[in-house]
Every structure is written in structure tokens, then in C-alpha cells.
Length: 198
Length: 124
Image 1 (cartoon, rainbow over the protein chains, first blue to last red):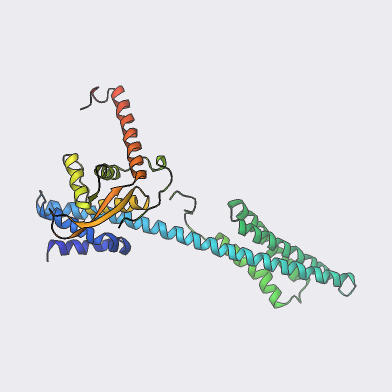
Image 2: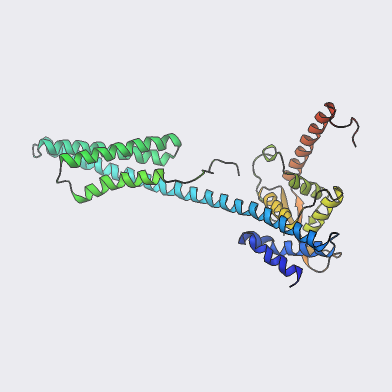
């Protein structure tokens, strides 16, 4: 097997993108270096393997850092969409509670139902708060979103206890949504590179 | 055809440079060179003390291209090395500013070392 062929095999330790961009140039450089080398073959190969090993590690670190940035960017987009959805659901919940409150004023609802409506309205407002905070996306806003989501979840659970005939859809949205957002908000995402220099 | 690269921050934000990176910028200060010519220039200027392997060289060139310090020139054969077409690289204006700043930074350090009598008063 020729030295150049062995070197081409050695290039496989580099990330594919780097190899396709610079592999040919590196092989040419290796060929020139091998032809004009002033050391014995073993010393030459040791220097080549050492060079490939430490530069490949450095290239892979760059690839992983870039992937981390991409992952963080994707998560940020997902959180913006989730924030928008939370605001919409919150507005719907608050408007629905208002409509039921109007009905209560006409005397068609019992006191337990009125408490549940008030709690539902409060949960809607908290979802709007959480959604708005998620759209802002700053660390302090994340903290606000967490508190609003936990409070919204607690209120819906209390409403469920005071109003046992709450619809399955309301329970699914009222309990499932804050839970899902809390999980998404606190899902481990590693080191945030979005603020580091290019 | 030369590829235009964006610059990353201010020249000052690039400092300090890794030794191999500065050696590559120094090699390109005279004009455009291909990879093997850069490698040879570094080895001969440092009298063999610094040897930049293919992986280190192209890894550094990739970062320098991404940072806008270096740009690709034409791709052509080097008559002394055969018919294979080689990619040539050259410093950008931004890269030249970074290299000058790094040289000044190192010069200031050497002056300080001389004042502290760590090295002789006259340049070696």
C-alpha cells in the first residue's frame, strides 16, 4: 500500500465536511512533504499521525460546538412557537371565563361553578403571562414563565377539584399545556452558545 | 475565483493568536501562497523549530477563512511541484490588521522582557 493511500485512510478521522473541503489539498501537501522529507520514515509517520490526531480532535470540537449552536437555535424557535400558542390558549381561556362569568351574573350558575370560572380566568391570564415571557426569551423572562406556568397548573388543579365535571378537553389543555411547557423550558440543553463570540 | 468572507468582530477581538496561526499569517504577509509553500516558509523562517503539519495548517486556514482574515486566491499549478492545481491563499485587509496588532503585542512583550533583563538589551 502506498504512503499516499495510507494517508488518505488517515484522513478518515476528520469530519466529512472538512475532508471533502480540504482532503485533496492535504493529500497534495502530504505528497510533497513525503517526497522532500529530511527524517526517517518512522519519525515522519509519527509526526503525521500526531498532526492528524490533534487537529482532527480540534475539528470535531468545532463540529460539536456548531451542532450545539444549531440545537439551541432550534429550541429557541420551538419556545417562541410554544409561547405564541400559550398566549392564544390563555386568551381563549380568559374570554371563555368572561363569557361564563356574564352567565353567572344572570344567575344561571351555582357558586362552585363561579369559583371554577374565576379560577379558569386566572389560569388563562397566567398562561398569557407565561406565553409573553416565553416570547421575550430572556433568562429573567424564563423565570417569570416558570412561576406563571406552575401557578396556572395549580389553579387548574384546584378548579378541577371544585368543579369535577370540567370537560376532558379543558383538563387536557389546562393541565397538559403548562406541564409540557415546563418540561420544554427546563429540558437540559447543555451549554448555551448563543451569546458566545463568533 | 476568490471567495469573500465575513469578518468576525474587531481585529482586537482576535488577539492573542495561536502561534501556528500567527506563523501562517506571517507566511502570507509577502503575498499569496499555497499550503505547501506556507509550510515551507514557516519551517525555513523558524529554522525548522516550528513545523506545521497538513492537519494543523488546513484546520487553521479553515478558521482564518471563516474569520475573514484570509481569502482564497486563484487555483493553479505550481511549476516546481508538478501539474496538480493548488489552492492559493492570501491575507485580507482585516487579516493584515490582525497580524500587525499581534506583532505589536508580541513586540511590547519582548520590550518588557528586555526591561526586566530576561533577554539581552540588543535584539538577537
